Length: 205
Image (cartoon, rainbow, N blue to C red; front, side):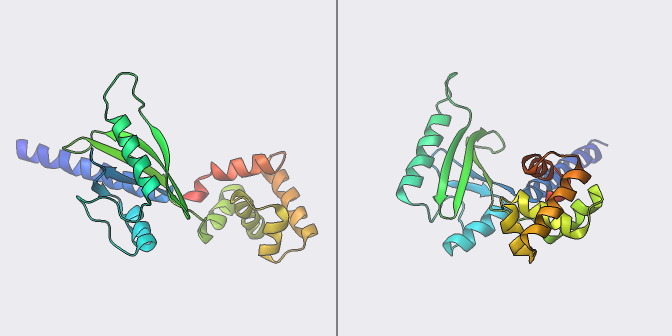
């Protein structure tokens, strides 16, 4: 009975870990775990693939992260040192830039998820909404496909003119679509529209 309970608890933990990884991946979030010497403890598959594409090498556990320039390596070491001080007034999270081009920011924070003291770099990978995002947005809010496509493009930082040009629309047509979007979604302008889209489950496609 004790063995069965332990097995069931292990399965629950595995299920939670898997669900958490899927949620992070859908949200475009990744993590890298470092030890006190800024050596790699572990990392999730999303950032591992990004690093492999970025550096041309596979990250190796137990080694320093390859491809970092000297200033970024210094910032990383300083953040870990500051977080590892263990003082009451020590910072609990430190933002830093790991790469400039393409830009990859991280939020460094201590972690007790490993057997040894660890520090997580939480990263948001460069993300472009999938084609499915427009379809999901259309279903969620009753939009026409082209309206949803325009909404997604605006949420990615494009102006109405830029989004319309990318979609092959005239500026007048793009503006008409935007007005229809505002009316259907009950928003008062592009800023509110973008906020609604960014908070929508459609971007988890």
